[in-house]
Image 1 (cartoon, rainbow, N blue to C red):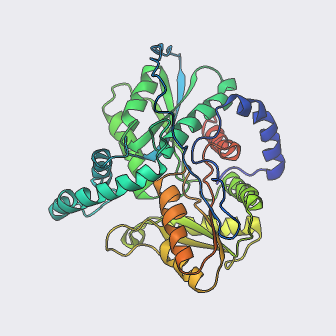
Image 2: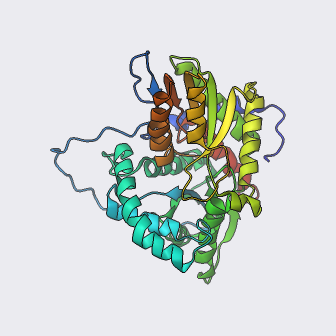
Length: 401
């Protein structure tokens, strides 16, 4: 929980005024950060979408070689970390990414010989092709990257601008737990620049061993090999942080005003985990419940207006419930015509929000009687999202700056 603030809305307004000049200097919204153009009001679907693409006939211009960044003295590094993404939207790249992800003992705890045979002989060949097709739907063809990579880079760049007043010895970078850029490569780069203190910020509001812990594992594995280790700080889960709840609520209210329909129900969908993990003591599910409760209080909604569920189930094991896809289907069958889905556990739009929620769940909702469906974009690198990341960074940097 962040430190007590006497006037939350007043401080938000003050910080917004301070950050306004730097927002103009930062790059524009990344693909996936804004809602797509809506179809006819009779049947509406709103979702964050990647950019449309580029002119294939445009001549290629060789970029000048980038100068090696100058080293700093007593540097402070800040590393934003997200889950990861394939380097390309093709089966081979997706297979490499999924193999690294699904071979992680934090993700699949029962990593037996039988699992390895099943993974390499059945799951990867089949799932890689299907997932590659899904990634192609959301791929940013202009930058030839997935939206989560585009957004993560932009978050780091915009945070660097906001922290510029702290001095040139504060360096911001970003990494992915799986695929590239790797955590190890970016930590190495920060140390090479002269950072002897590093704040690692896993952008997971709710803690889970399969997300936050595995990112920390990778940090520690790298540091174990370093002779002169930097001082480390890790951003803790911020599921009940006042700024996080305030920013989520204000962002949702803004998005709702832009819709051409009034939602009957708002569904907060979080990534799921196996029930067995929760039974062993993983706090993830209870932290998602707490976030939803605080968001209800902030918005003045009851449990019927703002509901919660868990998505992205994988395999046959039982996961924490209720499942998003079943909830969406049940709501449509019960006569709910207008549904809005938010994803508070994701700091950046990705396959799970842009395709699973905005496409797959929208299709299920309408197939079973629903009419209007809106997938609200994540905070991404929006002004509100960057205000939150800035606030969290400043809180964790106390004593260093």
